[in-house]
Image (cartoon, rainbow, N blue to C red; front, side):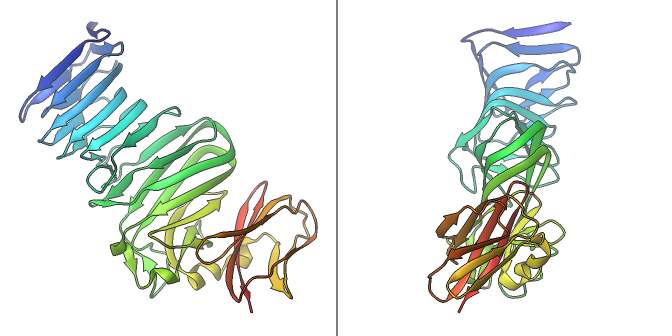
Length: 349
């Protein structure tokens, strides 16, 4: 087997214009030990079935660069420093750190896979992000509770997602993140909604509780932002927190499609999703009826701006009454159990 070795502290610069900077041919192996390689205005093409490239790779210049070839590539660290972007023509795996400083990493129809211990840092914006412009997805492996911001977007629109896993069981687990710059096809909101939705799917993740924050732009808003709530679509809608300041949030125990829309469009099916838990307001109290005695780990109440007003525990009580002496208006009640999380909108007269 042909081998090319790049040893400790060696720095190599490949420069080219409309030409390939590095080609790894079939049967060859490119490996390194804490090496640093900079590719200026040139491409990285991997045609080897034995790819092992554990080095820091810097893509820089002012001409678009590509990462391609017949074999998927794997870098320990990668720095994006090209205002005309780095474009994937094959799948890419990042072991440790992806640093996006100048320009975007464009996925096209290929996947970017991040290891469980990896991180994403950089100077994020509509010009410096992970551009999900085709069928490719951002995939993150996970072994333990995790908290990360994904600097994603498309069509030069930066719309990042923050995902924090508070608890869960992870077995050969990973999750994927995607974003579309359209109204969700099952969003029946007619006047106030977002022309943007995110899709999160997972494999090997069970019994989890996750806090999510979705960021959007002013031109994603149709109608009035003050009338928009977050929503989770899993075949039916589950209402999340109220949108404000170009973001909405929610705590979930399942994934699906996330977007913004009208309260009535998302809350009309809530009673079907409460799994026989009833929530209502009456005479200064929020009452929770739990006839099947689910283990309720927390009861959170938010005002329409998303501000947390109270947090209580209920256990397996069939009936729980929580004093609630707040002004007239709508409030979002979040019921968390060991197996699911549900939202319920109440009105205080």
